Amino acid sequence: MKFVVLASGSKGNCIYIETQNHKILVDVGIAYSNAKTRAEKLGIDLSEVDAIFLTHSHIDHIYGLTQFLKQTKATVYASYDTHKYLDHKYKYYNSLGNIKVIEADALYNILDFSVVPLQLVHDFPCFGYYFIHEEKTLMIATDTGIFPEKYTSLLEATDALIIEANHDIDTLINSDRHQMLIDRILSVQGHMSNTATHYLLKHFLKERTKIIVLAHVSEECNSDDEIERDIIKPLDFKGDIYIARQHQALPMIEVK
Image 1 (cartoon, rainbow, N blue to C red):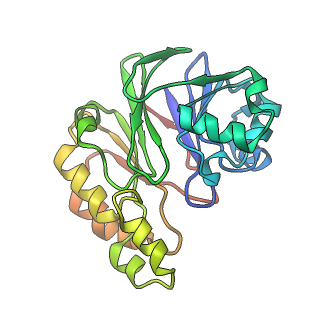
Image 2: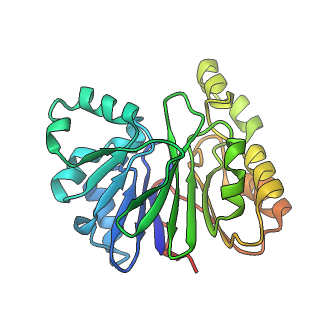
Image 3: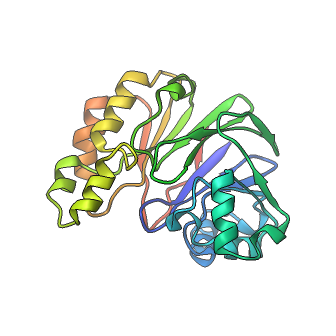
């Protein structure tokens, strides 16, 4: 199993995952043309995508959906709430015929993956995902104010982790953002801070995990230096740590 974060942040999110037989996406929050350009540089043909898993219906996760559906034959997997929102937003949505409702905490065998949707804590019903392929595991948990305790056992059994590290608390509080937005981000239904992410990784990460991608990083209220100070340096992680970017793709990462 290989994966690459094509885009991550408040302006759009898209993660690509492949096996020898199948290609999937988690979220399509950027334009198809933009994603295609980034993917082609890595030798990826997005027109061959078999499935799209949506975390939730905020625009930075669904922006490119109609374009992706026109360019691929992908089936869309998402929660009932997300499908309901999309059906309201796009009147023809349910007529597409290639949409599937999935529920949190159930185990699904889809293509050559086993998949568990994770119920995260956000201001709109939001899924994370736990993918299993040939005994290798990848967890995606972004857009959540806290990491639900019930999933720590899955975290401990994760080979590769894409986890939110949205903001430095002091930088956010002292930013010029409206107080209502600051309060929303800091709430349990908002976004995880560097401090929260470090605590989670320090207390629940096991030796099995060899890859960490820090994602949904705020361009205004976080920085590489703050992430290095708050997470990477004190964690002393022995594997590989990447910081996902908003405007460029990471390299392809293999889960070994």
